[in-house]
Amino acid sequence: MGIDVNSMKPLDNLCHPVSVIKEAEVLAADAFGSKHAFFMVNGTTSAVQAMVMSACKKGEKIIMPRNVHRSAINALIISGAIPVYVNPGVNKELGIPLGMSYESVKQAILENPDAKAVLVNNPTYYGICSPLKKITELAHAHHMLVLVDEAHGTHFYFHEELPQSAMSVGADMAAVSMHKTGGSLTQSSFLLINNQVKEGYVRQIINLTQTTSGSYLLMSSLDISRKNLALNGKEIFDRVIELTRYAREEINKLGGYYAFGKELVNGDTVFDFDVTKLSVHTRAIGLAGIEVYDILRDDYTIQIEFGDIGNILAIVSVGDKDFAIERLISSLSEIKRLYSKDKAGMLDHEYINPLVAMTPQEAFYTSKHSVPLENSRGKICSEFVMCYPPGIPILAPGEYITQEILDYINYAKEKGCFLTGTEDREVARINIVTEYEGSGEEE
Image (cartoon, rainbow, N blue to C red):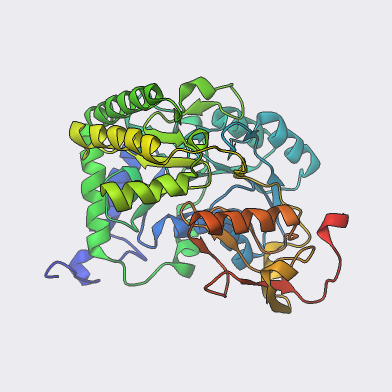
């Protein structure tokens, strides 16, 4: 607590840096190869929102995948920008959304030449990367900015075997979760800008929502972690890649599990794969990912990143030792032996293409009322429903509620996923748009 200081004059001011924070920003920009780097202490959520609000004003279009983090759609609610959704590809075997295909982005750009920006989620939570360089060149040819939600890609900047980073391919802005894979304290991130994006204007946008009492604990952790990665990043991620490669090979030898990796690469919707992500498909042993997640935590005291209805994700770091990886592998082997069952009746996908009726801002702020979830079919949702993590909405404001979505929500509840987003803490009721009485399933 003795180092939890605030904006004394010698310590500079995060809202308007002129000395030590400014110097730290210059060092961070150099480490990440950007024109400028902003210290973000409201998490990567605020970095994503600052990107969207810097690029788009009310009524302006932004092209984005629908499997974005809730922070991107929150930015649309705040700003009034209009999303043009590009539905990602889906791997039906794994049930996971993939990246944005080049042709899908091209079609969206040609159909919406007035769009101001393209937002790319790269990599996804599962480690899937889009053809970022080609998308960036295409968007720039049509005078659109390229914004990259790089929350899970901090390490891309510090190892040549990992996928290309946003700044290296010429993207205009990137939100980087330093706290996820870069070693800084939770809630600390960088917002990187490039090309012709104006530093002063972006800072004004950041200051609309970011705290005026920036935490020096968070800023210091960003600075220290930046230095560590700049000096030792190659060595650090050599070790992480080695650990993850070994774990993937050994888990695949167990049978029943599928720890997927580079073999998924197809040059488009899976342009590349982040080999530091230990993503494991579990449905073949008759267990949802969230069930394996719970067993690992409750019976084996192993805390992994998250589990959904078909997969688990472990994020390996330089802090992990060989013994921890061996424990994970042996625990998965024992879970298979003790708990595996017939997979009949299991839901087989994680992503549902949305039917959009209204913009997120219109739906969120319009007249609405609450109904039991089971009575909401065919109505327009006025709030979010999502599993957390990863925080990608199953439903977002302005989308029709279909029977397929209701089945997914109920299945996720049954399997033990942590559902969030609704006013109702039990997620038994949902807010719907009052004025509309039609059915999305008839559209």
